Image 1 (cartoon, rainbow, N blue to C red):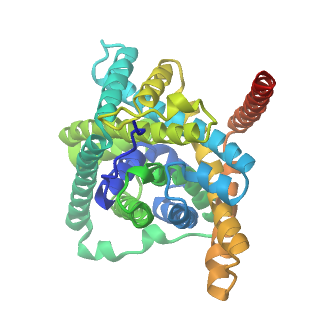
Image 2 (spheres, rainbow, N blue to C red):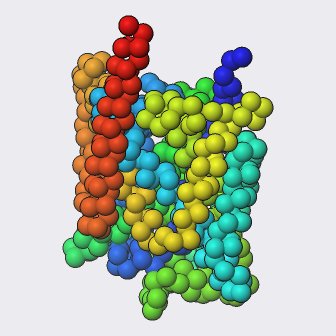
Amino acid sequence: MSKPQFRRTLKTPQIVFMGLAWMTPMIYFTVYGVAFESANGLMTPAYLVAFLAIVFTAYSYSRMVKVYPTGGSAYTYTSKSIHPKAGFFVGWALLIDYIFSPIIAILTFGIFMHTEFPNVPIFVWIIIMNIVLAAVNIIGIRSAARISGLSVFVQIGFILIFCLLTAKDIYLNQGASAFFTLEPLLVGENSIGAIFSGAALICFCFLGFDAVTTMAEETIDSKKTIPRAIFYIIFIAIILYTMISFLTAIAFPNFSFDNPDNAAYSLIQLVGGNLFSTFFIMVLMIATFTQGLSSMASVTRFLYSLGEASILPKKLFTSLHPKLRTPVFNILFVAMISLSAVFINLDTAVLFVSFGALIGFIFVNLCVIAHYYIKERRRGLKATFFYLIFPSIGVLFIGWLLTLLDIHTLWIGGAWIVFGFVYLYLKNNIFTQNVKKLDKKLA
């Protein structure tokens, strides 16, 4: 009996919805207060700089998925383009990114629901969220994609309503000419540092576009579909983010707040009052749920790839349900780990995700250089620009962002990498010894 394989059912719109659900367009509001302070209010230029930092890496992902259209993402690209040990390093770093992603969504959902229903403990919502996410993912990737699509439409709908209400306030208070100002884009001599500081934080609003590469084996014509979807995702995101920041800068040039954690809530109340604020909380909870759905789908596919490479036990992590064609063991494994959301701090989880993602981003850019420029020797003028200069800029941008992470995160992330290499050494050593014992028995 042949081993069950993934079904190729996903098309470009579904991949885009899954990526946007992972990224969560509503993240603009969840990080609004901290980002506003970091960028000294210059949100629009900060978002544009962050977009420039990410677009180089997005291009590199689009190049590499054409060469290796499998679910291993940056791990596979690095293993095959640079070296298997470098691939293990990237895969192990990404493991911490992918594992903590659903934890963040589950924990955030628990916090929101506990705020609305304070008599119900957070751990109850975490358990319920885990069960529902696991069930939907077990049913199949198409179910997750449909729910993600609905969530993305709701989020974009909320953002458009927010922008329309803000535009109405601008028109009534300042007139039509106010829309043509360039004031939100103007940068003073003393503002460059604030913009880059804000961009470093805001870059994390774009994390997630890369997660769709883990679904390559379930995507129709993945060599074309995935690269196209990557650029749709980041361009839709930057249009939404700049539209919100540009309009709010015109409407509320002197906006201030006491607590950055609820700054977005204060902004929403200014724009639409209490009723709109209630709608905001509902949309935010929906967005958090589908982020968890998409991130669980991504991590389970990534674990499948690590199982295929025998980094994790192959028999367990590459098993698929014979009818549903979903990695049921992986889904239950992630659900069990995600119960740790009861004990983990949200800020810590976010930093770990950032650490793993940025390591992966750096190596995907290096993979483009290694594969196209060095191995395939594409070194003409145009090729040098796209396969050496472009990804090199990506490496520098992302490397700079990595240095801005909390020092404790870098130490713990480094310890995780060291633990990974110890695990690899022991695993290979035990395997070698078992082979030698088998040879002696056969002799």
